[in-house]
Image (cartoon, rainbow, N blue to C red; front, side, top):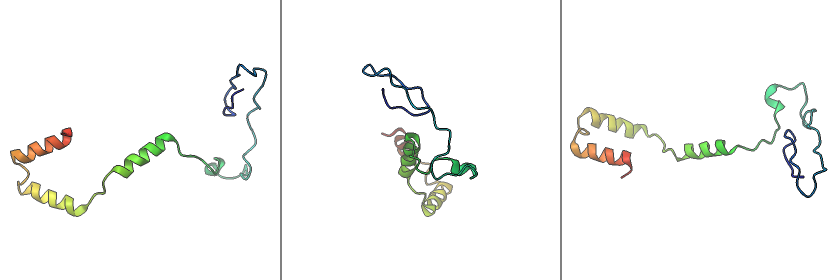
Length: 98
């Protein structure tokens, strides 16, 4: 029998189809009292999901926002320095990844 999550139906293997899985646990995990709050009813050692790790990695790749650079860019934009054909082409190339 293949080892599965206790909450799922066991999948018999060809070599040992007579085995049965133990019934799902109904008592709380060791060290967790039944009168504790809802947030502590989860196991204390949760592993992060693949989606959580992927999103965390994506957030770590976002460059930090530097207020002084944003302020300088706003000033240049208001002064008309960024309304030239060269700047527009450079911006389009950056957006398209060229």
